Image (cartoon, rainbow, N blue to C red):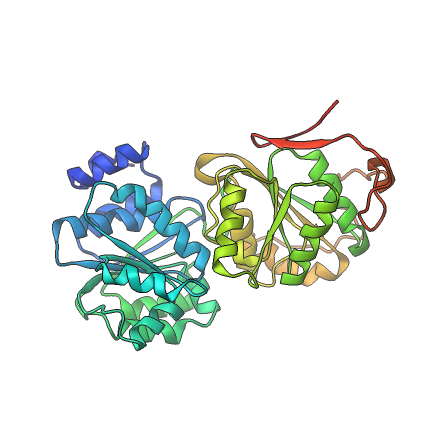
Length: 412
């Protein structure tokens, strides 16, 4: 396996940008995909989440644009957050070049996007809906865009973007290089690759249905009514930044408010927030201005924050693949992390589907106990011990909890 970027065939300006960005060695998916893409081949790539897919398609795109001044690239993603994350990852690699970029996402200012497009960007990152809006209004011309990336393609199809992707591609040249990257490659993606790609080279690194080994996974069988108390216990027991996943937008908002009353520095991100608010929430979490982020599956993909140490699945996702993406928010770029899932009696069928996805050859046996074998029975949790009533309002004084530098600690 190649161990240096120098050996991948990247041009000198790109290698200099990589060095400035602090990249040391390519990840397996980068080492496998970049040489193929540099040859002008189409690539169908799959790898576990958090393994460096953005650079695997971003570096060849930048190399092509530097050597072919008339070329341009388009990257489509399923969510606003992922689009913004991809562009943020590419910007350090573009430092010193004359390549301009544009971010075209829903919920963002059309005026701002029009200003970006007037500067004739050569790399456009966006979501299918907003890209189509600009195409329909003739504010975007893709006739010279001959490098296409579809990122997290499985999720785009799940979200119903198939028709919109087709519309976008009608505005692009037939002779183009197309890279499809995703954490999973189901049958629908194979069909899509046959339509959009020319003899794609398959790159598959590791299992696409299992999280990276650096994630310590735990499962807690629990009654629905005990989940909130257990969440509070977990937040006190664990140190560092925590991402809590909820099923609904309302649930995420309400949980963040309750945790705030318990003096946890908390905010929420969900689909009802406008793009400016989403950006502020993510930026504040990245800067460690609060410790706990409560989220819906809008944050399951594209949220790349290295200091997330724990993921708590308060509610299970409806789509089994989203479970893998959720817990993949921790243990990024070689770090270690932990993930815990609360499993209630009503979650049996959902958990079976998740377990079956990750362990296709394993037999899931129903448990006669509400606790997994070997799990110790906890003493009853009392909010009064921490100075709070059931509704989260204060009873009296309690040890102050602070969050600084990624650590939670009791003062005094």
